Image (cartoon, rainbow, N blue to C red; front, top):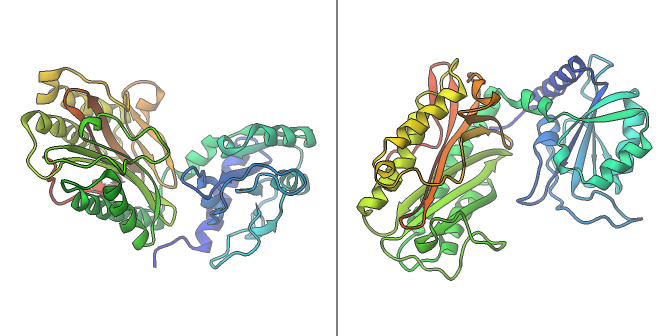
Length: 403
């Protein structure tokens, strides 16, 4: 059965402790938000296997604070870490099996309880805070005011470092997730017939994910005269009114997960027929540039090399020759890391990130999304595991009917 075992969570906590100690921290606080497509669950989930399903609710003084969030407190200066060292703070009173890999403290006021737990278990000094982007300013200010001896330091780099190379169990989950993503996009493709709406297409993809026990996270979808956009401007990314016509371009960028581990893939195709010459050039340009970069995802290569190869292939495409270089919605970025979140490393041609080395055990999403009003928009994205022998594409279909 796929999943992460208790020993692996204990090893993660110990490894995080060592990383923090080497960086001069007395402890680690992991903060997460969960319960909706706007969640930020990776840091707490990685250390304990706990996902907070309660969605965010504004603070209600005297009743709750930071509801819909969770925190882990991990002291690091009292080795060796035991399985009972990490403390999970949550407002969820009743938990199903498997239980989190931590001692659980249930509280309606996550902020003051977190302050109390830090005082009890971490000696005064620097404390690494990971997941800080999900912490609201009033809570941050409250912690600083009641913990004068503890300096909370934003330290997401520790989390990225800990999660950069995936374990065998994580890689198996990512493979399962990638396969589910392909099935979901295939279901969307089957539903995208003339007369169907974008909502019909989205519903088919979401149903496939949910039916398999996966989690739907979100999508960007557009079609026809609007295919050059990423998605509708309202809360729903799809239209229940826009009906597909034969010959329309339809593009979908879909993300979801299996036990927290993400798939992130994009496809574009023509509804009910063969592409025109211009549509074919568009589709081939995004697809071939991505596949060219995937060939270089091998241990020891640099991310800048991959991005450069992608750009060069795109610039030589028939589409670029005829239309020039259109605006790209991903700018100079050709991809990113993938695991419990969309994360570093970033695949780009310039800046410090370009010098980063590709390593076996990484999972990366390579993508391109372009738009031109006169032709339309197209996206292509694949998820890839880097192995010692080269790239393993975990979202690759056996054929590409989009071209």
